[in-house]
Length: 126
Image (cartoon, rainbow, N blue to C red; front, side):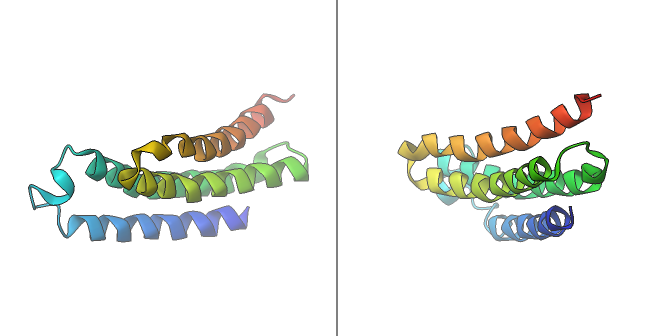
């Protein structure tokens, strides 16, 4: 799935740029409330989710041709991985400023579970 491969590399780049932006102030002890603060932890999680979910999309692209899935299910898995990757750092950033938005994490988690579940089922099919 070329779309996941291209998207994945764009997301890795975005993660590196987000790390650069966060890294410009990491040396400041009290930045965003200190190293262990809720806000700073969520922004770090969002930064690493760019990288991890970008790599997950690349992995899906590389194994996608081997999956024994009907084209429609393959497309659902493809878009589910992309949706999860887009919404995870967005949820992290939103929740860094609004703790009451924690239920929004259901969107990326559900998307990623759907994509991964379809992949696992494809490998389990005879």
